Length: 604
Image (cartoon, rainbow, N blue to C red; front, top):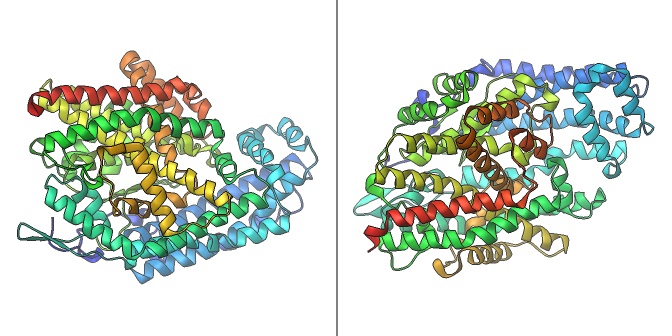
């Protein structure tokens, strides 16, 4: 690792994405933004006419879809520039300009939903019978009608839409603090200085075999977080308050009911994921923590030790290029069409894997209807990066296939399903690695990579989901959400899950400050839902082979044309059965048991 963090201008161009695929120049982007604003009248011309005929509604929906496709492309460019370097004033200004314009656009188009919902009962059903081409919009229209009781007056909806940029202020405040303002002290270990940042800690030091480096970097990282705890808590509290107020204004029984609505998920489905995995997985993960403590020779297991590698000598460095080749080989079972998407992602600079000051942390895939996807991550030469790469390419392959076979309105599935294709790719990568050799040491190494996947989704994100559930319960009771409260809640969640296998410190309680997912509604728990589904699907692929793969590909192509339960059923998995969740947890337990057996000689 470099002894200093690079600026965006200092990183090699080859390690960055090529956004010229979207717009060749700043002028072209500005022109496209203005064109979007100028085209609003092509949709607003239908205002007051949606009750005239099914033809009028169809033309309006077509015009809206075309406008939004162009608008999302413009917005995506500004977003991607902002995430590649949040310290760049030009990126900040472009993001603000884009946000203001898209907010104005959203406000102008609120009449569509308001007019549809004001039509006499049975009108939409009659329109669907009269106009065959409206069948493409039947699902979105039906979902809209289900929200009728929660809609406000057209005037109020327009005002709320015009404030969407203001509503996004808590999240932007969090990102500005995290990416543009927050700094961390470098640490010295064995005479060498190591710069600390969000990216370096979460992609390298947290999984480093050197206990001194792992713990000292965590101390520096936590000190940096601690300085911003009250600011971050205020931002998150504002976001939660906004959601609670909106749930009450819209006459929902709870904020949870409101946030689950768009996901087409019941509270029972939501609770089943949180409750079942926490209860049944905790004993297995405690056993895993005890194994790490013994193998690594630690007197005490701290939170910052949980991701330490069990066999660092058999964790070879892997370059980005090598990872691309392995991932591509592992996903070849998904066929020619899917493989072509993966190859293009790796060879045509769809991926930004540089590490630089101001870059967004973690990883994401931005899928733009009518265009190819873009992936952001920070590369560190370890196998965890390869699994992240496979994960994000899973989003790209899924959403590009969905866009290819569905029109825009039906291209994206519920959040409840969205993480299944990405985690499936991680499982396929592990299966590929496992198939390459019967060597005992390789087998346990592959198991550890798999457990990293389950840790990320069944532990990290699941416990985020549990913290959210507790925060919303307090907020619905009008209790204040402060830094002290959030740290106490996080401490309770960690203790409940890990028990006495880990010594809880004040630094560990600050983990609530690390993830942006809290600003994305009820998103964190969906990682666990997705991995539950992909675990069940992977078992079917092992048992059935090609027929199961074919079903999976057809499910990906279905995009968002079905509910999440219907998509799972299409693939051959019943997510309404609690046994499916328990089976996935049981599989994790079997991996840990096998790992313990493989390490037994070293333990004794």
